[in-house]
Image 1: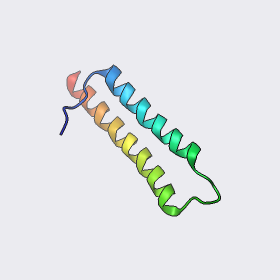
Image 2: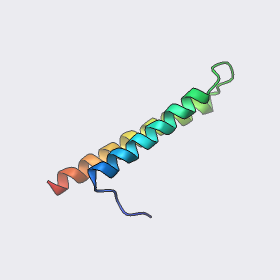
Image 3: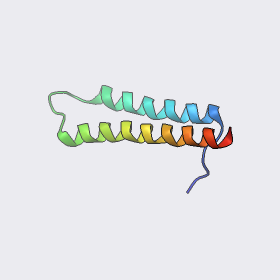
Image 4: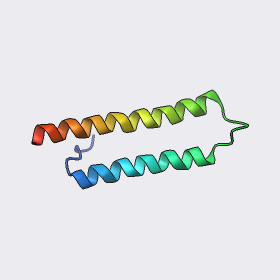
Length: 64
């Protein structure tokens, strides 16, 4: 397991990278052939980003 990201700039970069991955996956999807599993994967990416944001916010509150 890796060390937690505590630097705010690193946290922001991590979230930006995850959202960029989401946008790239979204752009690559063909609406005519998209499956429920594809949509589930997109939802999971967003859920993961939201969870990470909550973790970052919690760490920030502990440091303050």
